[in-house]
Image (cartoon, rainbow, N blue to C red):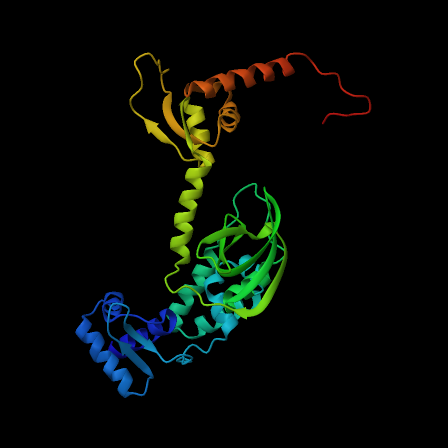
Length: 334
């Protein structure tokens, strides 16, 4: 038990850098006094680690020292987290490394656990791409990954709705969301971190110049906060809509965010089985297109501007489809 804990301390220090005794104690579910005794034992055994007091203090290994207990190469270690997503590992140029890392990991565990891991691999497949979505493999994904892994600056030509511009970036992380790759990076000499869709990168050159990665940057935390901010800015309006039971099923299958409303103004008559929901919308025009997708199974309550736009678009749609359009010569409908 103690030898396993000592190994865990080494792995935590090697993967996280400087770690406080309290953080180690929480991670391993022991007392700080136990951690301090373990640190003394590791030091006596020749492990080059040192501690620093104070608010920013903690224990860390000597720079450049590793345990070499895994037997994995750098590429294999990078690929390990992608071992369950072979397509993503291949996109990053780590397909063979992911397979090699899997084999080494399986070879290092006892036979009963090895059989269980093989069973999971046979019966669990992860597909990060949503339905009816095309694959999004950017031209410069591998260059971006190399810059992220090794902390190198990049120069890119980036196309947005404002046009194409040149950016000199310090890449901090890659994110794969619903089949699309994004780069979290900050511009050189700027503190703010921004998100760039890699499919919009028209050119990229990886510099030999490195940069100091911000110690406090947390990729997962940044992505959660930026995603929430993006969604709130993308859908600043709210629409109250009556939906039939069929439309409620369609809404659930679309996996769109909505809130059921239990209280409505007295003048609003709700048909039997229908429900009123609050749906975030990007604009009146976009909201009208969304509501029209439900046809007669939906009715807008508020805002009035959205209700008017739905009625206007429905009237134009009816006008366009009221008469039979003649079939053009030489065109065979199937």
